[in-house]
Length: 313
Image 1 (tube, helix red, strand yellow):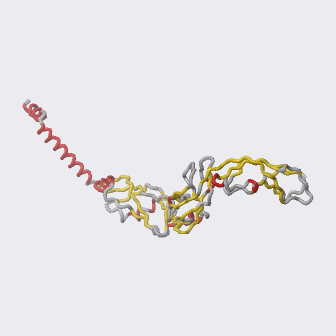
Image 2 (cartoon, one colour):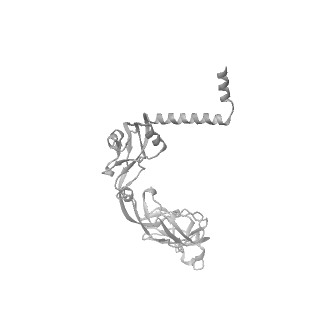
Image 3 (spheres, helix red, strand yellow):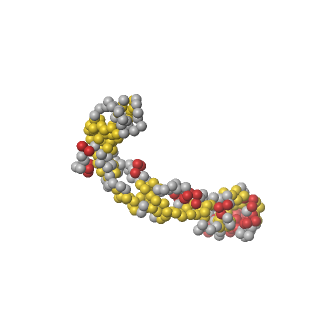
C-alpha cells in the first residue's frame, strides 16, 4: 500500500515532477532516434540529376529530366538528410554527343552513379527511361514586317501611312531546326485593340516556341499613322479596257458605289479622277459577269460596296 501511495504522490500534479517526466521521455526519444538512424535501411529515393554537355553549342528543346528514382541501401542518417534535401549534389550524366542521345535507359545508370553516391548502395533503378532532346545551336538575322491585316482598329478607322519598324531586323539564336524553319520576313503582330490614333509603341517580337529563341533586341519600335474613314456614296463612270475588236457591249455608263476615304485626304480628293474599270481581256463572245475595279481613290481608301456588271456581246 505504501508503494502505491508513493507512485500516486509522484504522479500527483506538480510542475517540477511533470517537467522531469517530459525530459525523460524526450531523452528516450532522442536516444531511440539516434540508435535507429545508425542502422542500415533500404528504400526508394529521388535523386536530382544534371546533364553535362557544351551549353554554348547545344540547347534543350524540351525540359531535361530533373531527377531519377533509385532503390538504395544506406545508413539512416544519410537517408534522413536526403529526405530533408540537405547536402544532396545532383548526379552528373555526361553527354559526349548531345544531339545523338535521344534516351537513356535507367538500367545503364548504376555504374555511372556508383562513384557519385557516397554512403549509398544502388540496388536498382526505378526510373525506366530518361528522355533527352538536345539540338545544336545556330544564329541568324531575320527581317521583320508588321502584320497589317491583323491590326484591330476601332470601327471606322484605318492605317494611313507605311509602318515603320526600328530596327527592321533582329538577331536570333536557338535550336538549329527551329531557326531554319523560320520564313522571312517575320510577321510582327500587335496586341492592342480598338486603335483610333497614331500608333507609336514598343512591341515584342514573338516566335513559335518563343522560350527557345534568344532575340536581340526582343522588342522593336513600331510607328504608323491612323485616321478616321468617311463614307461616301457616289455614282462612278464606267470604263472598258482590253475590249475585243468589233465588240459593242451594252452596259450602263455609270455604277453606284460606296467607298470610305481617310478624313485627312478629303480636302485633296478629286471625285472626277475616280472611275470604275472593267477589264475584258480574254473575253471573246457571250455573257460575262465582272466585278469592276475602282481606280483613282486616295491611298488607304476602302471600297465598301460595288455591284458586279453583266457584259454581253
